[in-house]
Image 1 (cartoon, rainbow, N blue to C red):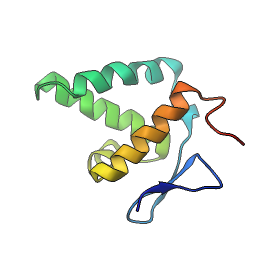
Image 2: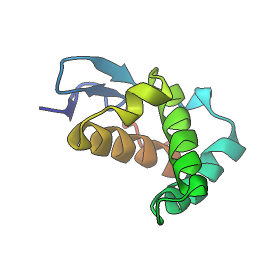
Image 3: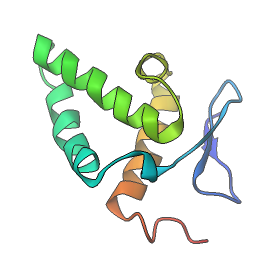
Length: 100
């Protein structure tokens, strides 16, 4: 089951056992800010623009956890939700999301 390691909130363990580490230094402030717009656009009707936004969002999420856009798009819904939720928590409060 997908979970974050209890001793390190920046670690995510995927269902297949891969361990990912969240590294927000992989993004610029502008890219982190753009992720909100991309998420909203990607959730719309399946148009060329929404599919492009989904791919760009997957690329940004992947960069933060060391995966390619294709690998992010291939994650199970449970793994994707965990990665997305954990990355979003650190983006919302990058200095305080990690209690360590």
